[in-house]
Length: 291
Image 1 (tube, rainbow, N blue to C red):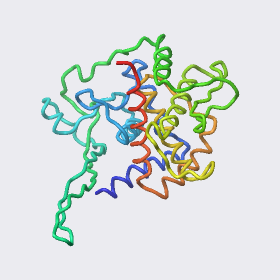
Image 2: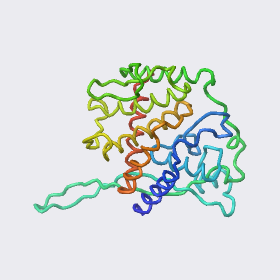
Image 3: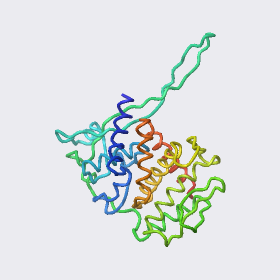
Image 4: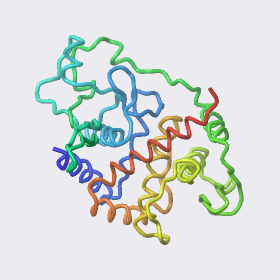
């Protein structure tokens, strides 16, 4: 089951990349959200995290679903509704560990935690009939569109990161522990500026005094570099969804796609790992916000 889940998810994202499409850059115009960008949501409004975001974004794109809400067959039934005949569910995963006690050679017992992955199916509310009316109601945008960028820049400032402006390169410098950004006016749009800053701040979280994330990078462009760039790409997508921003593809995406494809083709678990690291980075940045 585990191998099947890893392969199914990875193969779908590889197929998108081979066509030059980025699964995580597509779901930015959910028609029933009145311009609001969101993560996929459970039936109770709680957002999905990590790899499940990518999986359900991809499923929504493929099927043309506009609603961000998903639920299981059982949850729909408990609400007095039913999944339409012939509808197919979409895979989400649940990761946890079980504790197993093993007897050692000296007769002592030792507990060992064994990770496992469980897959189950959910349906978009557009596949379900008979739900309460509020399930189909268009949610109103929480933030006034005219204030959206101010909100995002306040979020970035509250991280306390050393963000410097100037030059024509956007990057994170580990040695001096600062984020370098071109001047705001150099970007095509406020959204492009914020999406790029979200990407670089995800890199900023890898510092040893923060999340201490290291993929064994030896040189620019190697596999470790590609893995870190994939984490930053996903982290930026998750943050843009949280901050209601519409990111724009970077000019260098074509080159990145080739390096990401190599990593994903060689390791079926790589996208799961990258999504988990990206979620931790986004959560870390949220944790720096004032209460």
